[in-house]
Length: 300
Image (cartoon, rainbow, N blue to C red; front, side, top):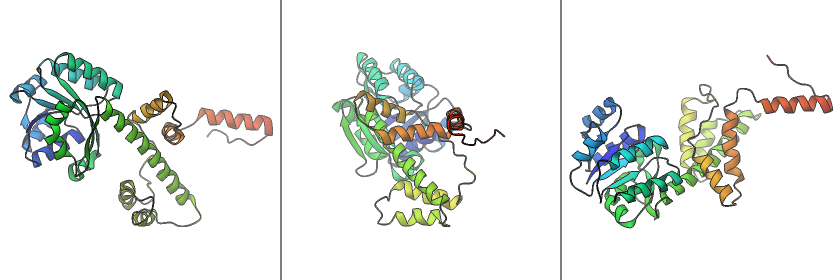
């Protein structure tokens, strides 16, 4: 089938390539002309604007996949697309949108007769080769129209229509929250190993744990690759960013009265990683010195 792809970053570009490899026709647009040229060189049809993309998609139902940063960029893109699309067309939001923003966009689209499908998309830069796990929310008829696209992007068994509008983004949010906890556990475990009195080969341990161990996972396979290139990770600063979904997961847990200490602490550990110096630690050191005479380390 034919589809428009808006946003040709790392994931959007790779998704475009995977769709082309599966025989679909892609009309591609990005704010970067170079990104559009690159997609066109790979077989996509170049579009110079969102209106141009909609015009080149032909007859309804037209499907446009939006793969841009969450928040205002996604909302603005959807609203601009609504000026060029018509009743019966479908917009797929495949970015990491907050499910509440997605529900608001769903209502705006529905008011104009356009369907909005939210596709929680996991796979990162490996998706081109391995496929993308797709958690899709939305109305049955709209999801059915897009299904050939979903099955092309996903590996066997990696796509499901998980519920009504908002369910795709909500399930992807929780997926990312779980990821926070898993990454934190691996990080802490390998630090204990690295600080131990034993000269462990961290790559070796990560590798053997991938065979028969109860902690085996794709993340461990990636750890093998990371340690192979830099055994002590000496070239990497211990600064961990977040895209927001861990925060949203913790907020959802609070809203639903669900205890989620592991995910919450993993999020807070990311915040701690960004501090070169902790003022709270200074306060604790000062108080220990005051009540117990414990030594403090002088500022360099």
